[in-house]
Length: 303
Image (cartoon, rainbow, N blue to C red):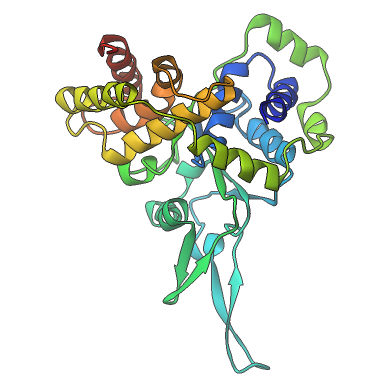
């Protein structure tokens, strides 16, 4: 199984050059059955990374471009009256796909953003009182621009909490940028990608990840981190954040070919899981959230 994961990482790394750490975190998010938020300035490869992952997974894929005039029904679908059947028939929206790329999620209004909450948390949506189950696996990748840019609507804390991880790509190193400048167009490379991890294999790996052992000592360390956040932040990390940190740590340990979680696994994923939950309120900036997450991991003693 790990060889398939390494093949996935290697293929995506050929497209997004010099960002293997971010790619590994994105894959860990997928294996942990979480959803991924990628935030950065335009032009650093957020959408390209999402496309490369989707094509490499061999799953049903839809892209939704969020804009200020987008409505919830444009995402979820709606019921339309069928004259032949003399009844309303539900027409599914683009959210009914295994991999959904939401481009520039913070360009849409809060009403439209909130349409994602039920889908991301419960893997189904409710339309006109009827519940509609989403495909399995279901993986949302969203990109967003920094909030200081014109025309953005900040994601509320409840929406941010639905994302297991938030990543930042940043500009590439000088050598990686030279490779990109001299190489083929990234869009052409993405178009030629072949699936390396099919749906059934992915579900098997996700099940195996949940079976990675977590010792009592590791859980003590995780809870110490959670309690430390609650002492140092207005609200601190919620129990759901603790579950997210545990699942991501299991996925990272699995990718390292281990059958139990070690503290370094939790530390490897900790900032990506915690920072956006600690740095998006009126007291703390996004950068402050990253700094707080780093200090929590650095200062919490390992038993």
